[in-house]
Length: 161
Image (tube, rainbow, N blue to C red):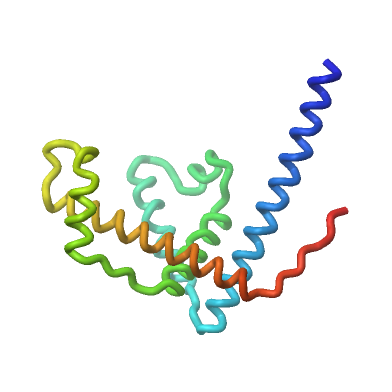
């Protein structure tokens, strides 16, 4: 029993430390992204955010549910959801348009042909492939952007208590 309490204490302590570091990194990253957007005069309007919020709201209402209840059930809030939308829109504007060529789509389909369900329409397949490639390119550009921002930033972390 003493051993289990000791293990639990270490686990909880390490989990807090890890969570604290992750939270600090997220706050720093959000700040750096907002600063980069501000330098480039990039803004996300309330209308853009509300337009994005309206999509799942409408879908959920069609199912007899509401967005706020769905978010609460997931341990989330409308304010946090809106902030994630704002950050996503900032990233999209900072990264810019992502282009996908027909050759990339063809290569992607060929590379992943074993995992494609039989009977998938070619137009659907090409559309799905294009979206997957676009998302992969976007994620790569976002990671490069964040690494660049972090590398060039002067970040001061508070000392641990």
